[in-house]
Length: 457
Image (tube, rainbow, N blue to C red; front, side):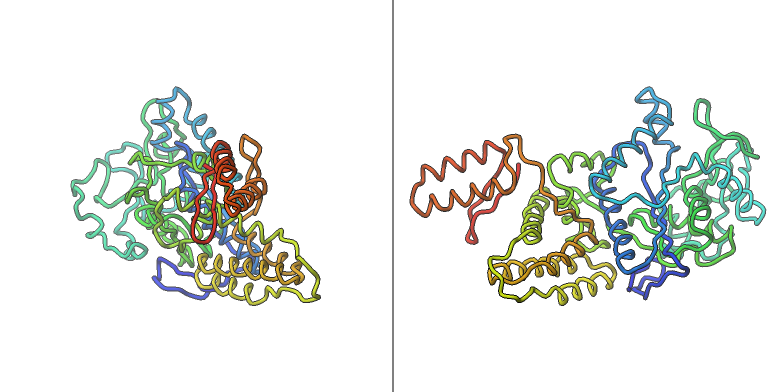
């Protein structure tokens, strides 16, 4: 299997260093409802996890929660809750959303506030090695000394001078240099705080992940994942402090970054106020449609949020479901052979997880199953293989819940067929009545050269 690493900027053969694949994926800051950009990243690394297990590997995946942060404190003040209550609320909401998207739980979901002891040990070690220093203004903060690592910038591919371009170069109080970053932040009155050798405070954002990766996966991990927006500063800083602390290189053998979800050309983010929450998306689309929408684009490419595209995937998911449950119209003794399609699926996934091509192989298998059904061939082996392959992509092929009027997919298909028959017989009044019934039930229909398609609205 070949994977692209942001650090080396090329695709390389992947094999785990040990008996199990160790994977660390940056999780959410629990300050708000999860948006579809979070779903994109979660689905991508869930599929990677599933495929590695499909290949026979044991996978140990860690995905953290940042549960103490400026944003969480601000949200707590706005809602009249404690920081702990805010974090717990949005962590539980995240789990519910991801469960409904069929994203598997990580092996471990550590929280920053439960890892303070390990974080403090790491900061003390960095100070002893000369890589970090207590704030010069004796405020109680601790900073990482960027110029202690002559390879700083190797992940993002930028020098310190380039990273500081366009940034005020005035040295902040307590820092030795503008590029230095906090590993321990002195607390302000009323904020969550823990005791430390430097005074009461809380961990900086970057040190959390370094400490948790070290605690649960060891000094070197196979895969480190996250969104492209985390390359700098988060992953750059995580890399330098981890390698500085352990003295081991590399901290991560492969750095995988998914492309960002965009809405009207801008990155989906809380700060821009252009969020589509996971729950909003799930209220109007099935989990399979959302996952297929994500997987029809290569994971490293940017993705534009498009409801019409997701509705298209709803219809595509229905085609797969129908093929997986089709019954042969005869018994010729011949069987549909799924082997060529499985080979194409594996070849696609082995090439840096090319899910668009993997999906194409599955749809071609579905087409072959439908041809076999019409020819009276045995479908059992092909349908079993198809279910196996779609499960690698986390697709459930479950029929969506019926509409409020109780119309299942099969009910709708039957009405569409009746409408087509009525139109063939030039009984347009009956055809219009069926169309009106479907619209009333929340089903949009569209007539085209290849027949009638429909989607729930």
